[in-house]
Length: 437
Image (cartoon, rainbow, N blue to C red):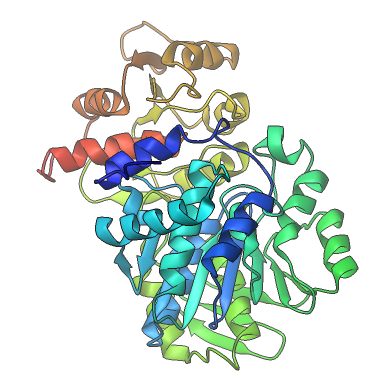
């Protein structure tokens, strides 16, 4: 690159076209550039992988550790609105200037090594963290685990939150194949925490083969509770009378328990008190994960984009109490299991507002409409229609129409892709948080 870009937007636009493949699994190229940049960490590193629940688990770890007074670096992906969301240093989103300085360093170090957008930006954020005075680093895996760019860093604790079917073209089409890929973040002699209540045999076998210290939910740690509070039990540590995490949803205690197991494994290096755990769980925030916005009609933002996540969303919707009608703003990538997502939610939705998304990978609104028809969602044109399907060119247009139709006792669920949720979030932001939703 002869003339370096001068804005973050220009950098990101350049990186999108720099490598012939958007996703190019393998660590050799990334590891070479990492070594040239001398990226290493003297503080504990927690790597978090899994099909669903990664973001929630990372957010809880960050919140608890920061309540305990630790300086924390958190890397997550993808972002919802601004790229900078991917890198947080002590709770603050990284500035354009900080990121561009690291992009320039990666560009200078890579020489003739070609990197994907994800690989390049991952290295830049890792270097940002390595140069920051941090007490802990939390890294969310992008895709899979074994061959993900994040896996060039050796974690002190690795968490696999859940194993389900997703990204089959890269990871395989069975839980056993996918479990092996996700177990690739485990390390010999280090704590390897599995939050999936039914772990694939391949994950358990891989942990044993490499000599990882495997913590299984239900064997090495668990939780119990009632409607008011819950308790965590680990190998040698109990945490009682905990408040429920501020993140809503059916699986959040599984995610919280995995986070607390990781902190137990690191208790000698990162001790955390009981009140700091309580405060961290109560104060944690994560946009787009069963996020219920204030006001009426109820608006739910959820990045659910595979059947496992859609089943959790369906359960969470069921637990919300009565709503007269449910409107769905739904957009999805065509390589996802769209039929599986629809199957989980078709009985909970009355009016489908399906939308195009601004990516070639996306299914069109018309394709989604056809999938709904194929799944037995039959629109009724009778007065007081119970089922309708409408197509829109953008999530913003779909949401605006749904909001204009929905009554105050109805709800609007926005799901199917990060881009679907981001489109609605940007629309609401452009309105200046005017209180219309």
